[in-house]
Length: 184
Image (cartoon, rainbow, N blue to C red; front, side):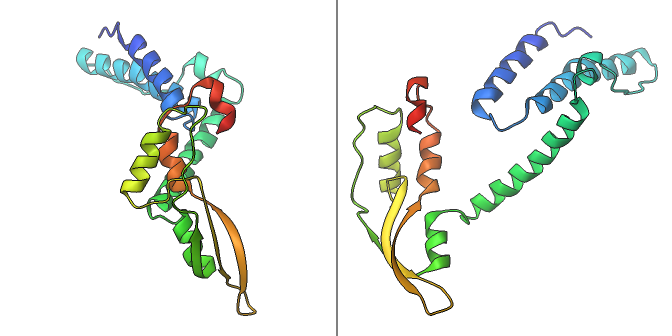
């Protein structure tokens, strides 16, 4: 079975993965690529030729790398952690409103209508602000306000600045040019 274009395809996928999913381990990509380029092809050839396929993972390039199996094990665990975090975030357990609901009574948000200028012309900032406004969500990376912080003594009236990860998540979809990377 000949797959002449598969190497080009997997190289393109690996490059795409680096930009779209930098948190996914390169070790996992190497294993997946090896599976589709070598093991699957070998299995199909064995089936076609009527011979037994042993499925042994013996590729010197992979196994010979220093600490490969340990890095693969860590990458596999990282996937579970990332899935758990994604599930938690999907339940809105990390947004500013969840924080306010958990720790404050009578919270009064301040300066919700203040908007940022865009002197560095970040790609997507304006679109992100407009999207947040349409969803009646604060169009900024931090929320300011005053509220009663719950404690064992009945609460303490405080001013606070709270991160707004929902807006930052929308904004991070847009890629900033390398020259503005320090501003994020």
